[in-house]
Image (cartoon, rainbow, N blue to C red):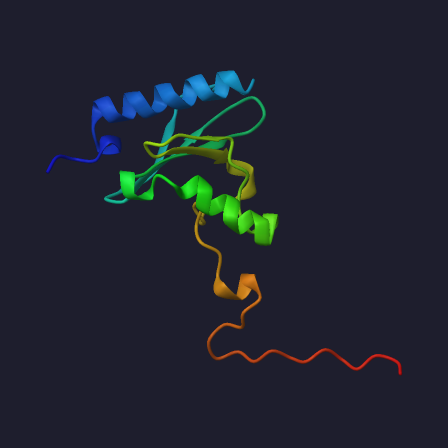
Amino acid sequence: MGRAGWATRAGLREASSWADAILHAVDRPASGPVEQVKTWNLAGLFRVPTPRGPVWLKTTPPFAANEAAVIATFAQVDPRLVPTVVAADPIGHLTTPATLHRPSAPPCAAPRPSALGRPRAGHRRTPPAAGPR
């Protein structure tokens, strides 16, 4: 089995070219070189500077290529839980605005279960205070 595309020169060029074309198409062209933030066996995460602020470029293997659909599903629950997807393709490229995320939190990370209204393990919900009767 070969290396993931984002771990090869050709794969990085292809992902960077894809992001460049998409960002031009949405009138947000890159204004500098792509910065590799993190790569591991399941994804590559890159920051692309643009005049309107950086965007994330995330590359994933084919089994995770539907991440944009997952983000859209979470957005139906609460759009504040997920980033806005600038563009995605069926082979696993995804771009989102970088300004929506803390530097330590990669975009598209699944929200904590407590963010969906379920209490975290070991935490009890406080019942609402009784209002006027």
